[in-house]
Image (tube, rainbow, N blue to C red; front, side):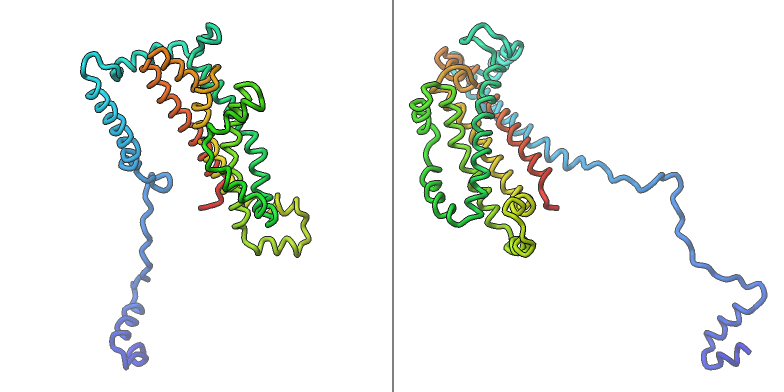
Amino acid sequence: MVSAVFHNDPARAAQAQAAASPGAKASTPARPSASVGTGGPAREPFDWRGLALRVLPPIFGGALLIGIWALLTMKEGSAFPTPAATWQAAAALFSDPFHDNGPNDQGIGWNVLFSLERVGMGFGLAALVGIPAGFLIGRFAVFNHMVSPLISLLRPVSPLAWLPIGLLVFKSANPAAVWTIFICSIWPMVINTAVGVQRVPQDYLNVARVLNLSEWKIITRILFPAVLPYMLTGVRLSVGTAWLVIVAAEMLTGGVGIGFWVWDEWNNLNVAHILIAIFVIGIVGLLLEQLLMLVARRFSFED
């Protein structure tokens, strides 16, 4: 019977005959064998190569800098201190960074904190004024046409050119330094916020008009989330400018602060302390920038 059904296909007839014969077993597809004792998906191996590429180049760069520094200061009687002498001075300096023996003898820790306080005040005032101003300039054409030429005129002015104006107005060194930080750190926040507002898709604003949203809801529900990455970029640039300016401002105004401390050590011809201050200024600035970059990545909507 099988042969009769598949008389035109001998191969299929033979397969059917084998399946119909007694003792034939149905073939089942082989199942993949499960791994025993894996406890879940296998973990990817640690990327030692990527870690080495991130860690080793800065180490080599620092070692190269110290090596060149040591070679240039090998000559006896050099006014420039050697790396070993600078390290010893740093160890002694940081053994008590917060000592206070009067206004003219305070540890480097206090000087850094006083500078950060001034930066925080000037930068905070710049943020309170600059970010709303950026929203107005980007949102309304009349503000853009009125303020943009003024920003283009004032933004390239050297930071220290604003210090005498502060001294004239406030009659005191500390508010004059805060004023200088304010006027120099406001421009990146204004410009980046305005650019972010202008790049918001017009479709978003059209939907807001259809829904008859108030201007406050347009700013808080539509503009602010879209402009936040631009705004945080301006904040990061501003804090770098503020930390850069405070050192120069404190050199001229005196008092307590890392800039004044550098100038005072120069008057004492203590070059080792000046080099230590340079490294401290660089490290603090790097930490401030990394902190704001971390905040910017936290609020970034990019994948």
